[in-house]
Length: 187
Length: 355
Image (cartoon, rainbow over all chains, first blue to last red; front, top):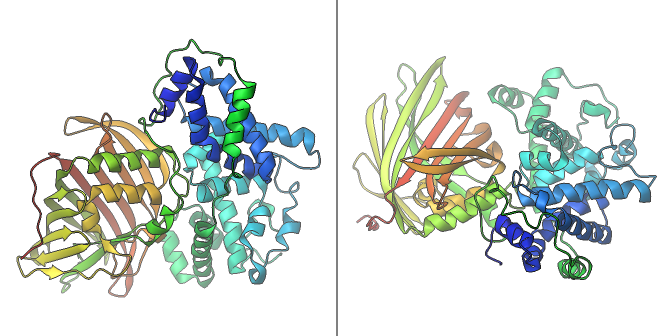
């Protein structure tokens, strides 16, 4: 089973071999968990979401048609679960979609970021949600902008734009040269 | 943090730099603008910091817990179980783990490839310049995408072929004093996987045709210009010749799989009667240098890798890029195109160090 491709493992699962799906889980768990962690920002919450992702994927495996990589499909499910989970349990929080100028406390968080005290993790946390997501998917997790765009459900140009704005904010913070208010922040 | 807005050209330059979409005009502005130059340096600093940031990892035992929950909670067959195998994924099937070991990234970061080539600067009394053409690849990706995984598998499959014939073609264009001079490069050779290769390149310049022979064995590379004596090329730590990379396609694919970003599946094509899968990727200009002896600015390099659709063996590698290079004290626009074709796999090859 270990030697099968994703497509082969899906076929084997659909043919009734649960070991094939377990292999898929082992193969893609870390990547799915990372996508969950991107949103949940908590290891245990990310673990729960990752588990839910695979259970949901198992139930819907027949719907995967191979027009996207299986991992992208899994991550898309994971991301939807992240959004659903954020709404009822954390009414004070905003989802990745909802996060944006005026809703995400970026300005406040960004005020803490100075070149003298530049902390990359803090700076990343201070980014607007969708920019942070796009930036980390592409520049940290290593997805292509096309894969990340599929995952997020936006055009690749939009995703590149978001990642670029995040990169610009971070570079501005490093260079101590405030950006020219693209997206209105930091302000 | 409220300050006066940047001038529009600075805003545009920084936006395009940040999005990896800069061209020669942007780089010309950056070269002349201290603020944007500092911004570009900050981007490089940022990239280095991100590259050093470890990927978040699931807690120990997390995958086992997930599997256990699956076993306990989902005994039923999934819906659609009667569905036959799904249609093939857009990427060629790949065996093996989808994520590259993070520890490999550091090695990729240190990798530098260099090759020699001949370019011409046109002016009344300007002779041909032999330019060290250096290509270095640094990492931009951390996980491994489907496209990168295809390249990794192709590296293994290509190396298993033991040997191949190589054909090189391409050109370098330089825009000097308003004139664009294109310098065609052709070459042929062979590779003996994994560590031996030879290439014979020729190009024509204002001074007449130039021939260069290159032999690479292990970590050593020798070059010979115009039938002269062989010279052992110095190999600075962490650097090796791009000729070496071209002659060792297995390693080239490995490096590209780690350094590439924006992988795209361009669909099928035919190379020498073989159906290939075309994979495009992008190497940032910051990390993919062309002219080692000259200061240069390139937004990015585009690489197309064509691997056999059936066997995932490398058939053709195409590198394109454009930017500016400091020649004779001025920023000179250049364009670069190189194509390497592999054929006659398994042919008898014996590549030895030159006498």
